[in-house]
Image (cartoon, rainbow, N blue to C red; front, side, top):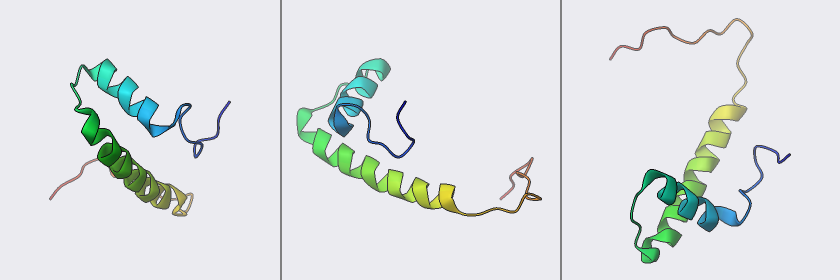
Length: 66
């Protein structure tokens, strides 16, 4: 089994192709590199959020209000 931080099998290009196919989104092949770059940036940001230590007493907010 792969670890959460392992790249998807086949790399991001394979993931992008699979996701576009599942969602029936037509993709111009010229955009695959830019989409991959954005996914890499988003993954790095998500890694920072996931690594933030929270005390055991922390609870998710039941209602979000602006």
